[in-house]
Amino acid sequence: MKINTLVPKTFLSNPIHSKTNLSSPIEMASPVSPVSKLSMMNSPVSKSKLKLSNYIPSLSAPPSSTSSCSSNSSSSISTSSETDESPLSSQRFSIQDEVNVKYQFPTPLISTPNLHSQSHKSLAVLSGHVGSVSCLALCGEFILSASQGKDIIVWQQPDLRLFAKFGNGDGSVKALVTVGNKVFTAHQDSRIRVWKVSRSSENVFKLVDTLPTTKDYLGKFMKQSNYVQTRRHHKRLWIEHADSISCLCVYNGLIYSGSWDKSLKVWRLSDLKCLESIKAHDDAINGLVSCKGIVYSASADGKIKAWGKEGKNNSHSLKGVLEGHKDVSFNSVIVSDDGKWVYGGGSDGYVMGWEGNGNFESWKLVSETKAHDMAVLCMCLMGEFLCSGSADKSIGIWKREAFGKLCKVGVISGHEGPVKCLQASSNRIGGGFLLYSGSLDKSVRVWWVPRYNNNTQAEVEEDNSTTTLSCTMKQSIISY
Image (cartoon, rainbow, N blue to C red; front, side, top):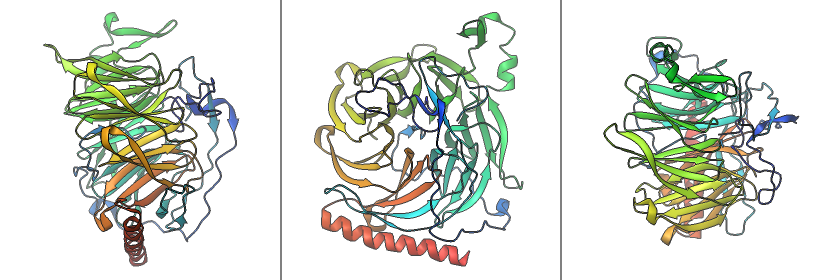
């Protein structure tokens, strides 16, 4: 997404009327003050001295989210680099990150400012990153988080201990996805890196490949027809991205990458070969999600496009276009499990929803919700609930009602910086679910969200469930 790990192609000064294109709030020409540190609320927890290779299970377990659709968490909100090339229409500024590694488990009560909102408890604050958190992924018992500080951390549940850390020095991480025992990370330097879990090595996550692969390069660099012009007097192989890769998603044996260079590329998981390069948008691509054979791309050009396979070559073609507000970029996109509802989060603070049935000519706009005062940077779905993270540092909890309408049921406050990424995980305690949020304040927070059957029941469930989860975490830490 066209922003440093902060805000993809967004308007922050005045989200509704500003004409300033804040596509990369972390990399504008003039630097801003660093994000203030989170205060220590508990003593740091020491790292495990046990041999990690003896305890790491396979990452082949599916994410615990109930959604059947695959999405990027850079998103979907999703660092400057020496080789960074951004669209000419973009402006950037940098945040100088302070190296301050912490690991803590406070459980403060976060009260919401809205009369219609419930209170939410922060079950944990994970502060091991040296840079702003850019993306999250859930895989089995693990939570993976990455930052513009170039580091990737693996947290192990249920006690949320820092299990492993890797990736330092490989370029700012913009997005990550897990497939089997492999982790794919998209970087500011226009590369996708492939990491593999090893049971025998002290280096638990080992870099095994980089996309495009050397084999792919060797098979194409000799032919002039394989080169495309990306800048004036500058050409690249069509298998290469020409700018930061902002988002990834995986579907049916393929991995899709969206970039600030406006292109969408398709890679085959079996041999990591680049199969297609699509000139998808007129501006940076900020989010990707796949569902039921369709891949949706959200862009700073204010459009969400749907792509599907067709023809003898089984190549991707444009199936439909969903347009948002004029001069407003889309920073994230999510799709319901049945593929019937598509929601886009915009830089003007609106969440827009469309209803369809597969025939994109019949899709219609059914919901326009002013969700935040500032840009919506990320979203995730958990059943009938939609969660939205914003540059205003808050997380909105919405319930999907009849005809795709959204009803606000809660607001979560607690982060000291814009909320860049969200992931939700089902949890049967009390019938609610766990919500993980990553922010530019360099922390990952874990929240308990009740089901909101009614106000009274939601409060009771939340109190009881939060107490149980907090006790479980604290007991694990004590024994640890």
